[in-house]
Length: 66
Image 1 (spheres, one colour):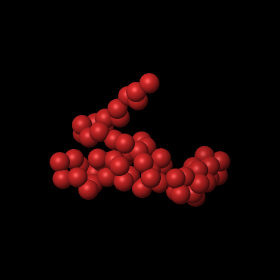
Image 2 (cartoon, rainbow, N blue to C red; image 1 turned 30 degrees about the vertical axis):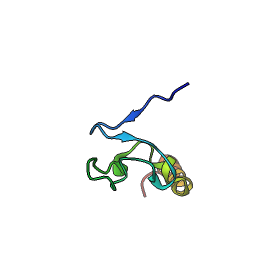
Image 3 (cartoon, rainbow, N blue to C red; image 1 turned 135 degrees about the horizontal axis):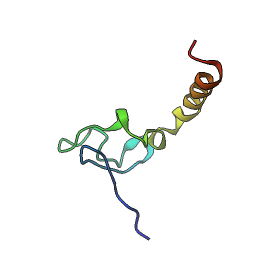
Image 4 (cartoon, rainbow, N blue to C red; image 1 turned 180 degrees about the horizontal axis):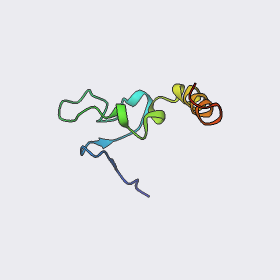
């Protein structure tokens, strides 16, 4: 079964991959803009940040914004 393409609101086709190397929205392709800053798939490309993000989110929810 073929995967449905992921298209950013800017029209850039996204391909989440390790460090965003295969993605056209990684900022290395002049015909497409960089989409990493607000990408819903950021943690798929950069999983090393997932645990710190989960900890931050847990602290925000359970301890409030201190």
